[in-house]
Amino acid sequence: MTETTAVVEMRNIKKHFAAVEALRGVDLELRHNEVLGLVGDNAAGKSTLMKVLSGAYIPDEGEILIEGEKVHMANPLDARRLGIEMVYQDLALANNLDVTGNVFLGREAVSIELGPLGVMDNHRMEQEAQRLLSRLKIAIPSVRLLVERLSGGQRQAVAIARATAFDSKVIIMDEPTAALSVAAISQVLDLVRELKAQGASIIIISHRLEDIYGVSDRLVVLRQGRKVHDCPVVGDLDEFRERVVAYMIGARDDFANAAVG
Ligand SMILES: Nc1ncnc2c1ncn2[C@@H]1O[C@H](COP(=O)(O)OP(=O)(O)OP(=O)(O)O)[C@@H](O)[C@H]1O
Ligand SMILES: [Mg+2]
Image (cartoon, rainbow, N blue to C red):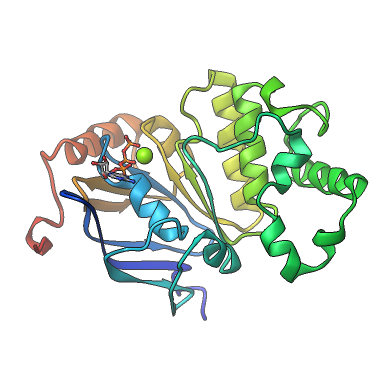
């Protein structure tokens, strides 16, 4: 592996649901320590593509390479073992559990392999949850608070902290700034920058183009299950927005000739 090897390379990924062709042969590359913005209109296939990368969906066709090695992921646990974590659009937090419980939610399965976590007592789990939150500079009054008591931004932060619990190298965030206040959005974007500063490679999905512009190094636009644009994030925000929208609505398409059935 070299620094120029992509941390993730997805090739010709196809996925259908009954008659719906959600992904029609998508190539996607994520480089080391890069923040990649993934955008597209509703139903473009963004979440589906990321669920394929996080092992939640098995593609009909195509291959995935992690640091240059071809991998097969049958479920999210396989992806986790490869260092890939996804923060879902709906967050999937357990309201009846406290912050610590949510940070450790779903860890039981891996704890058997990892050992120490399996026998971690409450006190150590609270300390570990606090350490993860502090490391990301997330301010939550107490890890003993039930997550249903938290604000939207705090809930998003807990979901992101959970995704970082195993020092994942790839973190996928599906619309982490949707339905948040302006202040909470800026905190989540700071969190993305902090994760990058700590060495993570990140894919962020958002309909808020200014958020993508603010944190991403590169941008990929999907439209109707195909990649239509892939470029570094440069220039000013107005130009960026205008260009991206042209690709989102189909007025421009860089890969039209490459499209195959
Ligand atoms: N589990 C599923 N079963 C059936 N159809 C699905 C399923 N998941 C996604 N689809 C369909 O696949 C297409 C792509 O959906 P996807 O959720 O990937 O879009 P998206 O780009 O994430 O959109 P949004 O911006 O609205 O979140 C849509 O037509 C959707 O209805
Ligand atoms: Mg989606």
